[in-house]
Image 1 (cartoon, rainbow, N blue to C red):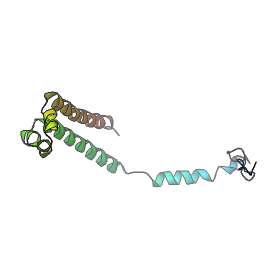
Image 2: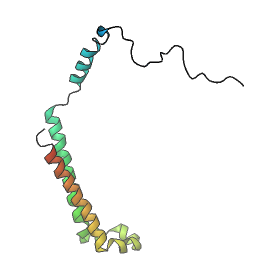
Image 3: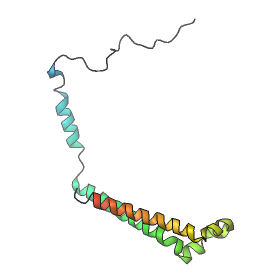
Image 4: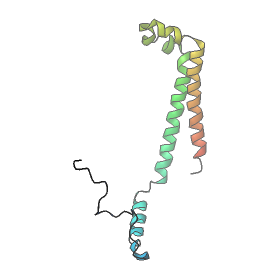
Length: 121
């Protein structure tokens, strides 16, 4: 046999846990963790603004998706459906329009649940 790779290294300890020299070994790490955690804290107003914009965007998209299949201007005279008549046949089906409107209602429901869940934070 030729040389095979060595799967274990003698320079690395077999136990990944740090050596236990006593309780004072981990003490310097605690202030660093606290200071890093306090530096990365997001302001409350920024979290509330992000939640408000996220809910508003989801509601707007949900309403647009609910309205689009029933709009004659947007749905029936769509250039995509004019170019592909087979697609227009499926798009004119009431069940397809209902499914797409249902996706819009689902989007509105998710937005409302998100607003209610994070109301007190």
